[in-house]
Length: 69
Image (cartoon, rainbow, N blue to C red; front, side, top):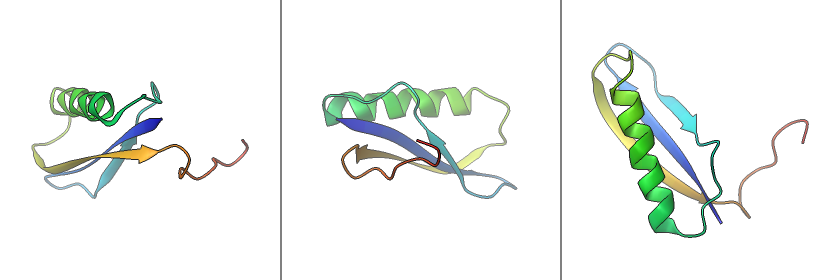
């Protein structure tokens, strides 16, 4: 099972990480497709022009436990 993460930079902003809350996904293809949807959401929002972005799919067996979980 995979979780999608998008990391991007925009003009005048530090690096931003967005973690997907819909996952996990059963395979990498669906995970990366979700990452593409997240990028479309970011570029349609109120952010300055995006300089660079990266989609990562993380295996949930290697995902660190969140605090309070």
